[in-house]
Length: 119
Image: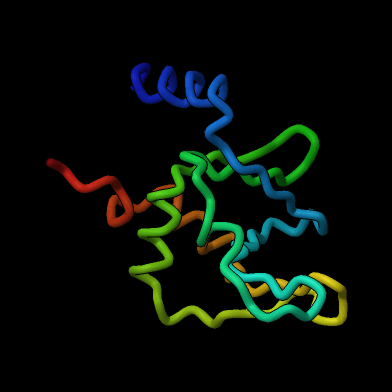
């Protein structure tokens, strides 16, 4: 377990993380995968293009959750029945992605189903 934490801390030094925020402080997590910047058409963004190792989601000024990007992608692949939602659709930069409710986040972080495959 100490190895995992050390690996996480070392990756922070290498800026291998992407940080997102729960602006409404409602316990939900939005995972962006596309954007339509200034109406130029939907293009991959967020999780679809990140080179980060860690997806860090800030819930408040004193709490956040760090998830390996691969784990988050496995979660979305396995739960592929989730609806793709559009966020900020009337803005200059609408996005599409998935809305994870608190119970989804709990499954994401605790279920062995999303653990890294054993080699």
